[in-house]
Image 1 (cartoon, rainbow, N blue to C red):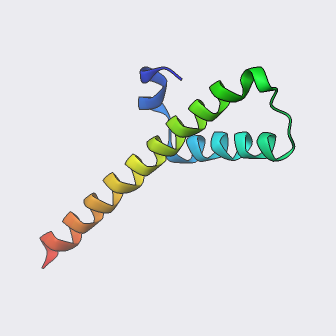
Image 2 (cartoon, rainbow, N blue to C red; image 1 turned 90 degrees about the horizontal axis):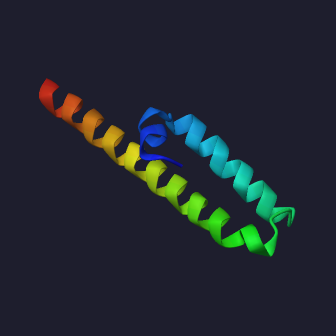
Length: 68
């Protein structure tokens, strides 16, 4: 996943891709030769989603705090 693609990806797209990877792993559809790359991609997606959630939480707290 390129940095440019990450910047344009939405949380929902990342989560959908992550769910797809998990399903493939659960169904044992990932070959051993692809496993390392697949797990690395899943980690990047998890990190991306966490960052989006953290940023959104901070934005919401700021909005709420500004109203007080």
